[in-house]
Image (tube, rainbow, N blue to C red; front, side, top):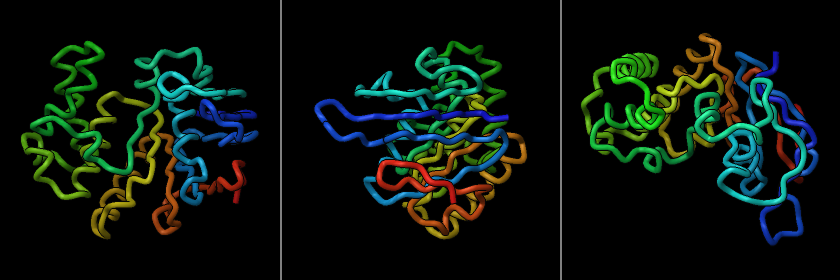
Length: 223
């Protein structure tokens, strides 16, 4: 079964005549890691925003076509609903971490969804276990290594229990040991049935993927 289906997707930003994305068609199968490669400026982040609903709910523009997430059109979903279906992790973890402790960081999303305190505590424990960071629950995120910060960013998304993860260049600023940690965690999440889109410009960071997509000249090609 397909977790995400993108059909004949076009998008261009306000005031632009050229489409960033043109007739994009692909699907993300449930429980698989799909890699997406492309040169800088090719539109990878724009595509992520379309899949996650950031476009058009936050960033506006001319959008055509369909993005279906778990059988529902993304345009028909409010952002709080989307957050429980799709989680996004970005290139620089420091843009996602702003709380004084790891525990506070992981509690932020569920608290905004008015989830009960006891359930929030359970989700925090489970998310930290999944990324092997239980010992850092009360640490200051600013004192962690780059790889550890990225693991906490992943954990903060996992507390919302999304079925789909979009990882946008999450290993581009991480050293070799940090990349190994992140790959191990992503592989573990795959085994638990998570669906993932792993975006990068370096194929060495994508060796855990089940299939590869290339974004080139505003279009998608399957390799």
